[in-house]
Image 1 (spheres, one colour):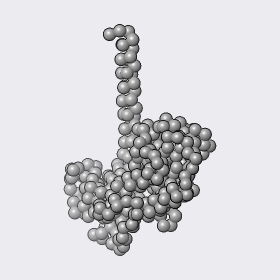
Image 2 (tube, one colour; image 1 turned 60 degrees about the vertical axis):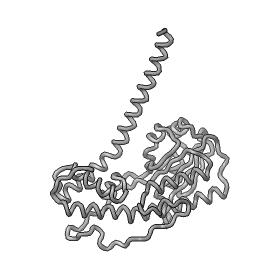
Image 3 (cartoon, rainbow, N blue to C red; image 1 turned 90 degrees about the vertical axis):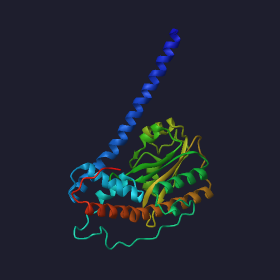
Image 4 (tube, rainbow, N blue to C red; image 1 turned 180 degrees about the horizontal axis):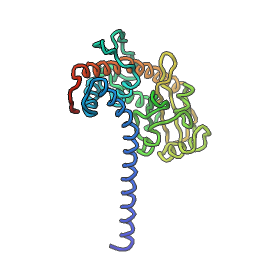
Length: 288
């Protein structure tokens, strides 16, 4: 092999190794974001139902998660936030009124009967990208434990972008502003808009985004429970009134549905988890 060939091969190997290390770092950060939450939930279940080990606690979480199509992370967070059940009651929420599922006019995903939050969020993102004529975007949901927003659904964005914006605080991005002000926010030019913090601007530009538009997902009471954002590969003059109105409908309907999901499907999963714990108190279990 010639000297030039060896140098090219060495450069290719170096790039490949760098990407491998970056991917490994992204994975470690993702695990670090989730592990403390699940670990805390396991400790609660061990104490509450006299389980012999953390593995048995995770097995119960996993069973309830799969039964109700709720992410283990979501179920663990709800378990930690919700006051413990009365040990004398067979039901965790004995006086709960189960509300009907809200209608969504932009998708039929909710009619499957599965209560799949992932399917609805995918439809929210797909509809938003169709309205804004782009193929890059993401959906973030409010993080009750930490505040801020965490990415739940995305498409067309780089792994580095998703890693950088896995969790977003209260300032420096269009999504943070949309959540804070509970209003739609347009960044017409990423390169020059003063609303963006410099690290965020750099990460967005590196992903190929030159403009973005963020829409809050709001409940009937006006609370923001998430944000959907569309990213464009060119500067944006602005959206039309028709586009803004269509996105507003998506935001209000999705927010209403997400609030219902938290009050209904997630509580169903917690109820099931409680029933499993009571029935298998003190027993050892294996994950599925």
